[in-house]
Image (cartoon, rainbow, N blue to C red; front, top):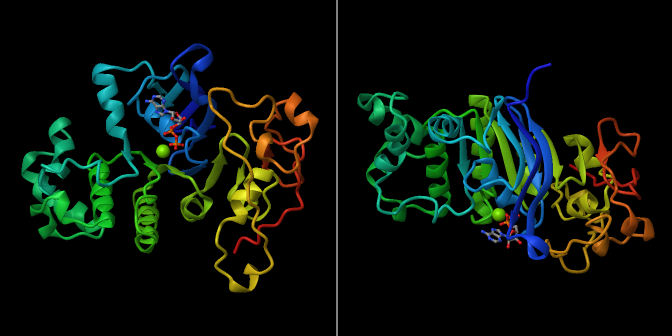
Length: 324
Ligand SMILES: Nc1ncnc2c1ncn2[C@@H]1O[C@H](COP(=O)(O)OP(=O)(O)O)[C@@H](O)[C@H]1O
Ligand SMILES: [Mg+2]
């Protein structure tokens, strides 16, 4: 049995304390294998960015453990944390905020090499910068420009190039295309999928809808509600919430479009300060009964689908999402 690259165990991140604490990340556990891409899907405000920031130790964990190659991140500091940062890079949602506007692209790209001496000698910076720019679909002359001279999609490409400077083993992508025009979203997703193959990168790919995640991920987790092989999640999810998400994914095959009805969720997102008893999804679920308020459903195999774990008292294997 090989150790996973990333092992997250019972991780929580709360803001504030006591009865008014916002439980942004609450007892989350998952693994990512070397070279694997895990998709993480959840609605806006459900704690995805808080999870990402806690994983990268950009903010403190309230409890739980994060192991990268067997080394604990949550308690790391100094040179050890510096070393871990090298292996784990991040791309954020907003390419307008994540790049320092005062730095020319060649400086932006070379900054990580300056912060991690010994990775690449200065004499090689120029050559490697051009190679990286070209590998993300930009050109050598872009090295002399400033971030403000680029479009949103190009800026996200710059962010990706910068994230690759230290040759990370894990790339965390927090809604990398949500802020981009729909017309360029697919290009950036395809770029990430190609880089991942070429470099055997492991990725955590975070998104608020499944349409984006399905193209890049080997395995998908919703927020603890359902997990399994990609085919099962996309073609026959058993959890009502996954079914609702799936019904919102555009079908590429026009013949199937008319056959599928969109499931629209009713009601407001529950407050993370005071989540519902039992199943957290029940207040917006059309299948909810009294057991859903009384007992939190465990994540177990409830259908005939091998490897499909579903946290729902009313898991229904009959749903077909017509995943094309
Ligand atoms: N620094 C913070 N202080 C207090 N509350 C926060 C902070 N950051 C996020 N939150 C709250 O945590 C919850 C999850 O936010 P976030 O992680 O940004 O969700 P997502 O990325 O899934 O949209 C939200 O209720 C948000 O208001
Ligand atoms: Mg977010």
